[in-house]
Length: 280
Length: 280
Image 1 (cartoon, rainbow over the protein chains, first blue to last red):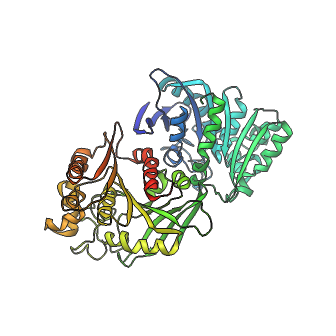
Image 2 (tube, rainbow over the protein chains, first blue to last red):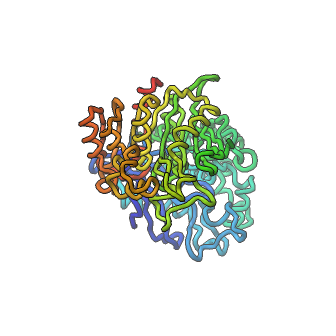
Image 3 (cartoon, chains in turn blue, yellow):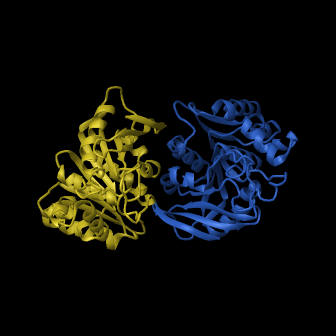
């Protein structure tokens, strides 16, 4: 693992790192904020999964998470959203919603994507091992959040690892990719036409099929341009209601899909996570 | 004036605007954050001047000022750092420290820069008139801050307008451009070889020549790569000591010149400004 940069911020260190990933067969970059802490301490870890077109850099620059992480003693990990580099296949038309920047947190089964697009295993296995090895992380105290496509990633990964993550939240998540255009394109392209295979990568379907967590927190901008066609939080609300999952769904009047929205509520989410991580 | 974008953030609106500037004879862009406020209220205004290579966008995306501005009720205005566009002369070698992105907040007297590079008048006259006209601003309650070259701008503009600005602060400012390479190149290029003309654009020289404000706040990273050659806060300390100006100079161990440094101390500066603007 190579350190690309390290900048002191809010008393801790914001780092960017690169490593050769066995899962994606590419170099992968990610960022980690380590808050100020006592020598030898092991700190809880918050995972943040980013949305379409993003790298680690968007939330690292615009997420406004460091102040709260410093106060609450949280490590903040932000992976990339897809493999990248020469030879990595992209959307045939170069569209933003498939291929580079759009890995959708699945292990692709369809050629030519199956060789590199293994973001599920990368985020749930390979990168956690790297974090455990190189950072002062207490891996028995983890939580996960994400935005849009990364909200989809956080919800599906959280629902399938209820013992690993003490808290799961999302900003403007894609809650039911099997029922919206972004998701149908991505899951079809990476996993093939058999929709049964999609259900493990669809938060609403996972809940319908029996996945359970005690509670979820979702913030959603009411002026989000993708709200009605791609995000559809009402589907998550219905699934949670039927399953007895305590969903807090905050509809935020006037807010859009951008980091101006995310940063406005980031501290709320981090405090909610910290309370469940026992970090406060 | 045209609105380029508007995003709700922390209950207020982060806008970006463009207008045809008479001073620079170009289109100019700037950003304004207006915090949540009561209908009809007039709010104090904090000016933020950016550093070399920046536009309004750097601080707007990375400055982490909106939460504090929302809590304190402050309008935050971020101008660009130079004229831009076709026909605007640049550094002959395309260097980052002169020409585009490097206006140094002066009115150039030297051809070919004198036509467009009128950032002093733009920031002190034309843009304030626009802010007065289009935003809920109480122009009797203004303060100014900046970073690096913009710290130079904030200090010189603040020292020359002690009645206009209730507070003046800076992050890692160029305090004595007449004594450092960045400043010698810029002031020589824009104002010519007569160093007497530079003294009105040099904070240390202005104080030596009698300019007075009651107090100044400066935060400076101790690990800033430009500290010893370009910034030299000890020169400002000596000038303030001799003049009886109360300088609070916070040397910040381990911090560099980046927005990771600025964002870490932005809230401190805004609270300091708010206390002097009567906004708390």
